[in-house]
Length: 116
View (spheres, rainbow, N blue to C red):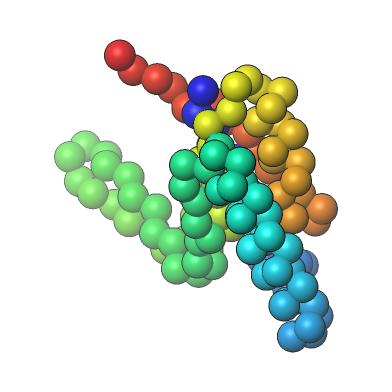
């Protein structure tokens, strides 16, 4: 079954305090991504640019309306995701718990709806 693992962290509170700390964080993500790919569960994933680059789109009464930024103000922002193939929710939760961002933020595990 496919699961989307959504990585939420605070853009401001979780900035590396030094270049060395940033390098450690990137190495953790590179190692995790390699492990996930080697396991055969990884279907995709990417980091996202900051919420300052986001645009929210709504259509109301036939008119397209755009707003700079994300839909809602929150303490944590969506920073990236992994799409995985796991045997069940327990396996997906185990995979999500290994994401480095889980140490400072939260990971939302959401099953992908399958249409036949």
